[in-house]
Amino acid sequence: MPEGDTVFRTARRLEAALGGKTLSLSDFRVPAHATLSLVDWMVESVVSRGKHLLIRTRPPSRVSAPPLSIHSHLLMEGHWDVYATGERWRSPAFKARAVLGNPAFTAVGFELGFLHVLRTTDEVEVIGHLGPDPLGHSWDPAEAVRRLLAAPERPIGLALLDQRLICGLGNVYRSELLFVARVHPRTPVGEVEDLGHLVDLAHRLLNANKDRARRVTTGADGMNPYWVYGRAGQACLRCGEPLQKESLAESTRSAERDVFYCASCQGSYVPSGEGAR
Image (cartoon, rainbow, N blue to C red; front, side):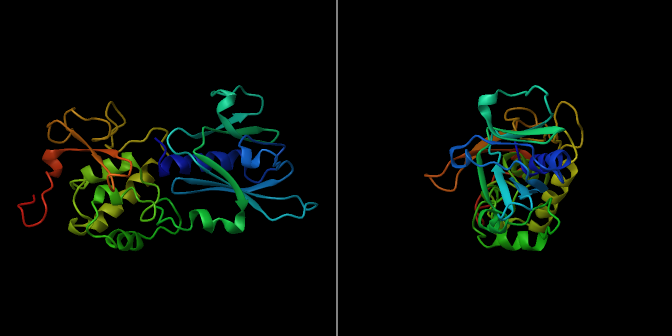
């Protein structure tokens, strides 16, 4: 499942293949940009911001145009692959949304959640709302805590998925962080005993996985790379009790997302004053 560490690795892979090189192939397979060609444009850099990916390009000197950024989001199924030019693609061509290449490499974005091309100076319009990025150079844990506490009554299991508060966390990290910190997903943010510790865990876990081909949160790259995610009904690796799965949603009209936890290690949340443990 693409989360911040996945997008970070994707950006680094694309940067290695395209960064500093002039495009000889440009093919956007979405209606809004089907006629746009960036052939002869140079890829200046590729960066990630949470779950968002930005490929920044600048025009050749003969073209009077502003630098452009290719903005994509993987959502659930999207991925960017890099191939040696001429190498056979691993996914079917009809799933490709963008193809960029130079004489050595071809980068293909498959099943992207969305793809936009905008002026680089306008990037703030699409990523300016995002919270601190645990994998960013300007990571600010105090700001992340401040944003989380802005709605102290909100369940922490919902707050961690809000990209305006901390960007890059998804379902996997939400479940794993709360287990490691022994916090029930329904605990209100304002009742989390050490929110700073939870924010620090997010930073450490994402950074520990940004260089791994396979995400691991247990510290052991074996049969169970995750403590709780996707393991409902299985034995908790810490206490042995069966793991639980619940659906959390902001309201009855919003989409529900499954969260996994251990009722023994993380407790069963009861509102303050009613014997919460």
